[in-house]
Amino acid sequence: MTTIINVANQKGGVGKTTTAVTLGHGLSLAGRRVLIVDLDPQGHVAFALGMKKTNGLYRLLVESEPLHKVAEVARPNLDIIASDKTGEAVGRYVTTLNFRELVIKKALKGSTYDVIILDTPPSLGVLHVAALVASHWIIIPTKLDAMAVDGVNEILRSMAEVEQSEDNNHKFEGYSILPTFFDRTTKETTTQLRDLVNAFGKIVWPPIPQDTKAREAAAFGKTLWEYCPDSPSIKGYQFNGKRAGGYLDLLDRIQEVIQ
Amino acid sequence: MTELKRQSIIDPAVRDIMTNQEERTVGSKSDRAKKAKERKKAANRLPGRVNLDLPLELKKRVFDLAEAERIPASQIVALLLADGLRRLESGDLILDPYRRPSGSPRYDWTLDISSLENSE
Image 1 (cartoon, rainbow over the protein chains, first blue to last red):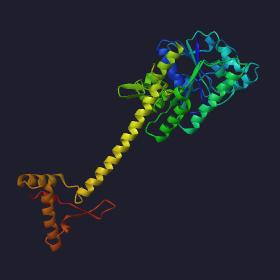
Image 2: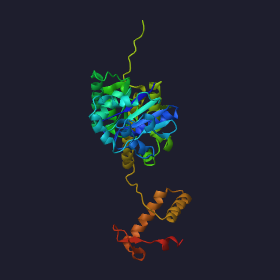
Image 3: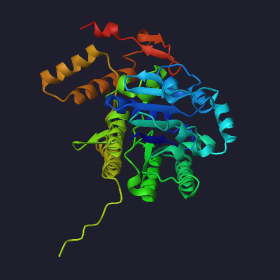
């Protein structure tokens, strides 16, 4: 069975694409067959993997081409459905459909992948809702500032609406909040993390440390596993003989979820 | 009777990071406070202490002399300074032969004492 993971937050710049690409490549390196679907017309999934932006999403959802024909090989075990500016037209087209909220679920039905990761755009459009309806698990990356944390509330509200809608008949298997760009030298970061934990408890997963290497990796079209596997963003924090946070921690947790 | 155990509502790894961060914050605050206190204490204890840039060779000669005479280097410097100032005030020592125009906006002159240093 394919597990569909949605990396979502209506707030932009919180690390959604980096999380989607790093998690996707990490899972593929662990031997899973992975597909990343870029639902954002900015097309940054292809960019982050050093590939050309294409109209893959348009061909999948508007021209109804089969998944296996549209998917492009990014790395061994890792395929992507790329996006580009035609992604804007996809949103407009989907709006005209009768069962628009099910469009992604239908397009991905019968896939042979172990995991599909949806990288959603930073907006609340019909594709955003369709991505929620298709997903088993939601990862909500958030920066630790007041506006981004407010974005977490918004996405949780959207999720609640999806679950309450009888048309969708959908229940999420789970969700987690992933603090990103975590800078433990600032007081605001600490305060926001404490507030987030107080509000959501165990749903808050260990943070991803702020890391310049992560920005550099995208510029070279390399994933973090390729460019800086020993960086803090991958390995997290180490203290008192323990390791916590970073994408390695996220990978371990997601592997438990999809087993 | 089974002992009741309070359930954690925080992910253990997140709790570890938060605890570690709090410890670091407390630690760095107390370090800063300690350093400031030590600096203040040192300033009170040694009000006559100064940092001056000296030619390396001159510095070496002062320390060699202090070592040879078994006198603290500070006291050798104090004696020579007192003597030099007395000679300067009485006109036995004049600055003019050593004056050179300064390239610094802060000073008009620098002193070139290489002729004195080499006249051992």
